[in-house]
Length: 242
Image (cartoon, rainbow, N blue to C red):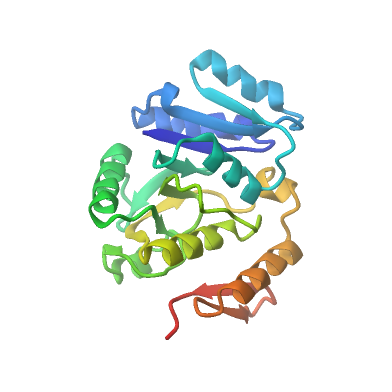
C-alpha cells in the first residue's frame, strides 16, 4: 500500500501534520511517497525526509496539481493501489467526530472497491456530522469527493486536463469509465482549506477555478450543473442527470 502526497512550499506543515498523522497510524515511512517540484524553493527541506526513509520524488517541468497527478499516474504501475493525501491533512474523523483507525478504514474501502471493480474512492467533503449522519454509509453513484484523501487504482487512461478542479475531474473521469465511484459518507478529513502554499501558491484563485469548472461543464454536460453561489463564486454540482 502506497501513501502518495504531492506537496508545494509546505515542508514543515507536511511534517507536522500529515506525516505525523501517518506515523501515529503506524504507516511505514518506506510506504510514503512525497512528490515535489524541482523549482520549489524549499526543496532541500523536503529532501531531508529521505533521512527518515520517506521516498521523495522530484519532478522537472511539471506545473499544477492536475499535471502532478498525471505525473503520479505515470510514475506508478498500472493497477497499483495508492492512497493520495493532501499535504495539510490533520486526521480523519467519523460522523460522531471520533478518531478512526486509518489502516482499518482503508482496508475496508479497498475490499469494497476490489469486489465491485471500483477504481476511485473518497470521503465526505466537509466536517458536518448532521449532514453525514443523514447519508448512507457507502454510495456508488456520481458525487463530489474532496481531493484531500482518496484511494485510487492506477489507470493510465485517466488523464486530467484541469488543475484547480482536478478533484471534480477525477470523480467525473472515473465514474464515466467504470460506472461507479465509492464514497464513504461517514468519514471526513480534517484540514485548513486554502492555507498558505499548495495550490494557492501555484496560481489557484477564483478565476482559475471558474475557468476549470466551466471547462468540465462543457465536457460533461450530462454530469454537471454550473451555478453561482451567493458570494459570487462559480461552482459545479456533480450528478448523473437523466
